Amino acid sequence: MWTVEQRNRLAIEHQILQREGFSQFSVYHNSAYDTYYASGVATSNSGRRYSLYSPIPSGFPTQRPPLYVTDPLPLLAADGTSISRLGVSHAMHALTPHDNGWVQICHWRDSRWHPGIVLQKVFLKAHIWIEAYEQHLATGRPLADFVRTMAEVA
Amino acid sequence: MNTNDPVQRQMIRDAMQAIAERKPGRSKLVYDKTKRTIVAIAEGTQAPQALNITADDADMFGIVTLSSEWLREKWPDLKTAGFLPVRFSSWDDGDALIQAELCIQASPATVRGILLLGQHENKEAAQLGILLEPTDIQATAQDVFVSPEGAAYRGQIVNYGQQHLHSADIVFADIEPQLALRRTGILETTILKDKVVLCVGLGTGGAHVAIELAKCGVGRFLLVDRDRLSVGNVVRHPGGISQVGRFKVHVVRDLILEKNPKAHVEIYSVDVGFANRDLIGELVRTADIVICGTDNRQSKLLINDLCITANTTAIYGGAFRRAYGGQILRVRPKRSPCHQCFVAAMPDEASDVEISSTTDASEIAYSDQPVAIEPGLSLDVLPIANMLAKLALLELVADKSSTLNTLRRDFDAPWYLWLNRPEPGTQYAGMPPLSESCDEMTIHRWYGIYFDRDDACPVCGDFIASLAASYGLDPSLLPALPDKE
Image (cartoon, rainbow over all chains, first blue to last red):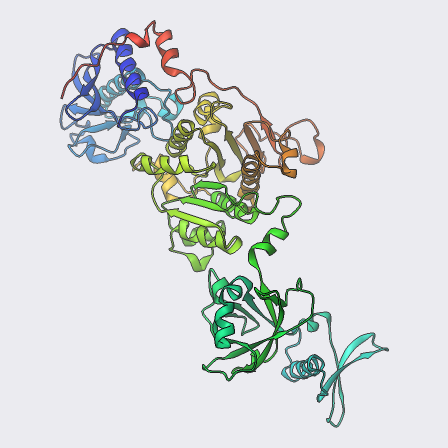
């Protein structure tokens, strides 16, 4: 299923995370199913912790890896509603939520993703998203007000 | 026939029939020296009526087209039985009858006919009888059929069940040689017959490219598209209103066969996505060239990945928003920049795409921020499609002897840019008028643009080594990943 190039790419992605200050995140191999995922816990400036999970798709790195917030669950907006209920939301920079109700962070959309983007940048964007999310909680303003649009960043 | 006067029409027909049969009739045609034209004279009337016949009137007989190939195949049966039933698709109130075997898309009206060799009783309730008679007319004439034994025959209508079928020219069509004849000198007869073209995405541009390549004689097509033709598509797509609701692969297959009936066309009504990676990868390996006419980044990158792996040349074409212009990227694996190199080198250009369908819009829309569908005009898309077809043709004849190969020096660049208008808000808004510029960029000119391959490209370069080097890692000494459920 996986090519040698894909396995090598994932191995180096893991090393980059470890060496570049993202050691709270790792790329894992589930040998029972021969699947890969990246995950870890991001801690915001306020000290709150968010569990992130990215199942590596079989078409990686050409195919965009989704990135979910698995904890807290549900992840609530400032008005107390679940963000995942918004679906694909520009205001909250969220893509199609996971069936489990996990919010999918919009790091890059399919129309902007390309295989030159490394997972380190994906987790970097997740950190930015989390800080913007906490600003949203504090002010009630849309999360999008606190991050540049992904189009601009990409 | 030009005139709508039924009396006039009948007089002209009678006169022409009399001439054809070399028998005197009630009407005849004479040359009127004073009017310097041919007139039909109706005899037996109190005041003989003179009718002007225009050049259009001279084309007064209908046409019945039979397949020479079919007839050669059926010739032994015809010789044995003396007759063969044959069915025709009838157009324009019977003015044109085409043998059903030749029709990709038939008329709703049909005519039952019978083909006779020698005088035979009509054994079926045929509406049209065609008698084949030996002739010494040269065999190259289109109204002459040459039997497998080498004898020449002409067809003649001998009976008719419907008044409008009583006079018509019988034409024998040898489809493949006659189509090839029109390409001779530029594309030799069978030069593209063994070529396989994979067309991914059959929107306005993709469909047009496929049809143009069919006209050139490409022998095998693999068509991939998951969409159906909608009413809104019709103002741009080669498919028409009568095709609405059909899958585009079916519509384009029929249009290809209308132009090249001998083409072999395989259709795949599937999404160009990672879920179908294996299938599409197999098609890429089969193809001599891939034409990618999809509008979204993911499908283009998927095709790019598969083509680089399979070492198959691909050409990507697309219009900018509302088709103010467009671009074409030709990727010769490992010899020119790939689509990923293009994305990395020119991200803005790579992201400027036409939003021509709800599918395209949904790729970039949010539930709280919809994206409008903003297609361009067909006439703005077709210059791009024509250029793409020509570039594809050059790739397909590269290993053949062809006049077209003189163009290879002209079309050497990997990336081609075309502008239909100086679109406000773009870097092209301030272009000088076409008539005032020789050196500066203007509308309606092709620009071939060179840029380099990225040696560290994650698709066609050595990205891993480059990445490892930039982080001080040795790619051959990477530890195994942690194993975890």
